[in-house]
Length: 332
Image 1 (cartoon, rainbow, N blue to C red):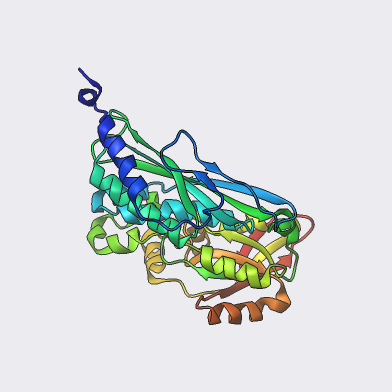
Image 2 (spheres, rainbow, N blue to C red):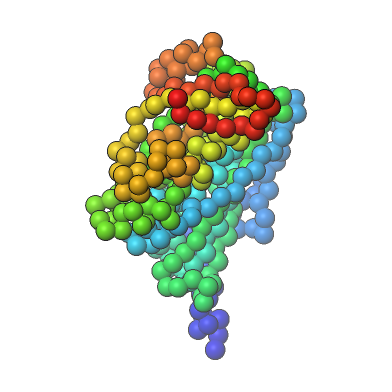
């Protein structure tokens, strides 16, 4: 018995790597990339003389049980964007610029066309996120995954000048809470969503598979124009609006106002029977990336982003809490 008979096709893996190396792509940091796909490790020259104290920022994430839908409905390109977005959007929350991305793709049997469809989606998402795909790993693991199933994860690195790092240390009472809208469910809550929509999945599959929005371009425009006025950013992923608490200091809370929920979230809440607060701790409910900004610049920021073609919702404000309590949020 050889390795292929045992379930691992080395030639298929090699063919996939060669295919990927031949794919046309735009490099966003060609002067920094020393070596990329195909080696034992990728090399990226860390030279940023325009920064006083450059800090590398790293993030890793996966797609979760949304993968079950991707397998059933062949939504490989969608979850490819998901895995890129989940990582690079997290980098943005520090004020960082994404530099490069690596992917991990594991399956029980390597189907070349499926893997190519996935990697094509990764390449497209990296281009939209203005970062370089510089490496990754494809693992064929018979006996671990059943036929047709796969898993994927991503790893991204960005750069930020230390004096410009965003976060709770900048936030104070009076700051305004804005948000870039989500485009759907993104990549979280699918263990619940698959149950809620299992009876009419065919009708809802397109909505459920819609990929996570990439916020790199609008956030870069925002930070270039209003770096000092932007205090913190929160990517609304697993845990829903509780992610806002990660960018609030002790002694304050987020006072949230009403916003119009996309119809898919209204339907999900109706089917679940959960309260507004409960569902908002699971799903993003229409908010993709929250931005905490200086109060006196909030309206100017909204107008600027509208002129750039991006919509920013005004969804609340930071207010003082009783005593020096842990951060919290509430609807008012």
